Image (cartoon, rainbow, N blue to C red; front, side, top):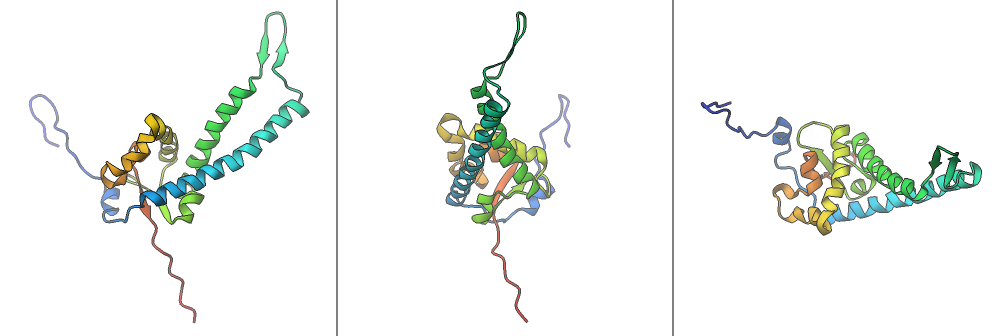
Length: 181
């Protein structure tokens, strides 16, 4: 690293992992859009029954209404609408965070369209990268989804959530079936 009298100079460098990914075929916009559409469908297809079950159990079985406990000095309320909003965010992060982490870059939508999230810094996606990327979808949605449109602007076809988590999305090679004997 170079030094001068005032301090240090910035030394741009690529990671060994990024160098290993050089030349990897990037996923097309339509592959990525299709994969996220499939994944959003699955998020809500699993979220809605889970929330319906939760609401049924809390209101019908546990008989928890708005006021859980009320006395002269203490009042405990269950604000179901706020809980449902929070649960939706948590469900989204769990889906996109844990699945990407456990499968090293695949979600059901990405698997179907033969694309994968690849880390620019590690051989495997770390839990933190996966959660960062899941939270980064919110940043990509800001300003009318401009973070997704950045696919066409930035090098290596990265969206906002890709740059936040230091990832890229690559095409998976077709699997070759083993020759039968």
